[in-house]
Amino acid sequence: MASATLLLAATYVSAGATAARWYSTTEKAQWSSSELQAVEPGSLPARVDVTEELLQVMHGFGACFNELGWEALQTLSKQDRQYVLKKLWAPDELGLTYNRVPIGASDYGDGWYSHNEMEWDFPQRNFTVARDEGNLIPYIKAAKSYMDQGSDKQYLFASAWSPPQWMKLNHMSPQAYSECGNGPFGLNKTGEMQSSYALYLSKFVTAYGRHGINVTSVMVQNEPYARGCNYPKCEWTGAEMRDFIKGYFGPLFAKEHGPDAEFPSESWLGTLNTDNFTESAKTVYGDKEAAKYTQGMAFQWAGASIIAAAHEAWPHLPLIQSENECGDGQNTWDYALNHIFERYHAFITGGASAYVYWVGVASLSFPSRRRSWRSD
Image 1 (tube, rainbow, N blue to C red):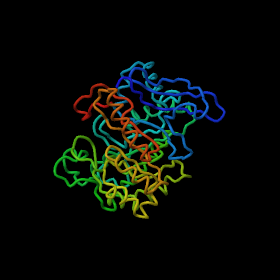
Image 2 (cartoon, helix red, strand yellow):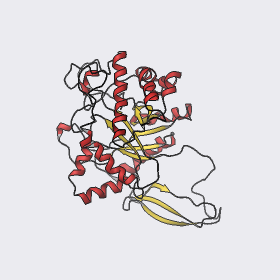
Image 3 (tube, rainbow, N blue to C red):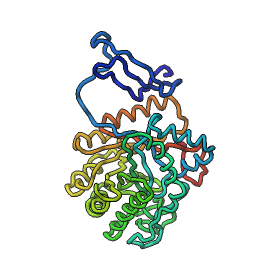
Image 4 (cartoon, rainbow, N blue to C red):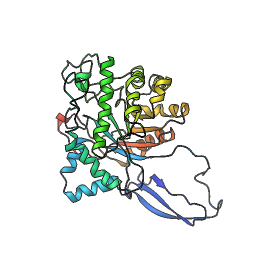
C-alpha cells in the first residue's frame, strides 16, 4: 500500500491553459504538488472522465474546537503553537474554514460544565460563557487570525452534547449529563422547559457574537441516538426533534437570528448518528412546519448510510458531514487510505458540502478523569 496515492485536491486545466497544478498525498510525502502539462484531447488514454454535470458545491473542511485541544496547545512554545495553528487554519495550508464548537462540555472537554447550572432558571438569567472565555473563545480567535488571511467564507456550527442537568428527565441522577443508569433520559419535554432550552441555545449564539465570533448554525443535538454513559449526551427521537424544531427552536432562531439580525444564525437538524432515515431525517423534514425551520442537516458516523437518501429526497437542502470517525490514535497510512478515504467518498458522493474532523488538536495522552480516548 505504500505506493498508493491519496488524492486530496486537483486543479484542472482550464481552457487555453498549458499547465495545471496537481496536489496529492502519499505515505512518504504529504500534500505534494506537481505541474501537469496540457496535451491535445484524446492523445492519452483516459483515466478520468470530465463532464459538464455540476453536483453540490463544497463549502470547506474543518475541525472541532475543544478544551483539551487548547490545553494541548498551551504546552507548546509560542512559536510552535503558531506553527500548528497556521498548518491547520491558514489559507495556504490546510485552510480549515468549516469548523465546529461544543455548547458546554463535550467528550474532549476538561470535565462537565454547562452554561447555566442554576436550577429552574427558565429565563436563562444566569447564562454565561465565562468558562469559554478562558479556552474555547481564545482558541477560536487564534485560529480565526489565520482564517482571516484568506477570502473563503468561514462557517462555525455549534451543538450541545447535553443540556444543563436540571433540564433533563434524569436530573436527580448522579452525572445526569452522561445518562447513566436506567433512565428516563432526554430533555424534559414540558413546554416551559423546551422554550427555555431554545433560549439557552440562542443565548450561546448571542454571547459568542459579542465576542466577535459568528456562530453560523446550531444543531439540535450532538448524536441524539447515542447510548451508554461514557460522555455527555442527551437522547432524542425524530418526533421529539421535529416538535422541538417547529414549536420552539426554529421560531426563536427565525426571530432572534434571522439574516438581518445582529448575530444571524441558522437552525439545523443534526448531528444525526443513525442509519434510520425514516425515524430521523424524514420524520423531521417530512413535517411542513418543521421543514420550514430546518435550514440544513448534519450527519456523522452511521449517518453515512442515509445522507444520500436525504440528498435525493431534498436536493435543495444543505447537507454536511459533521464529525469524522475518531480512529485509534495510531494515525496509520493504511487506516487513512482504506477507511477514512472511504468515509470521504461515502459522505461527499452522498451530497455533503462540508467534511469536518472531530478534533483539530489533541494530546497523545489524556487523564482518565476526562473520559476521552485517543483519536487520529
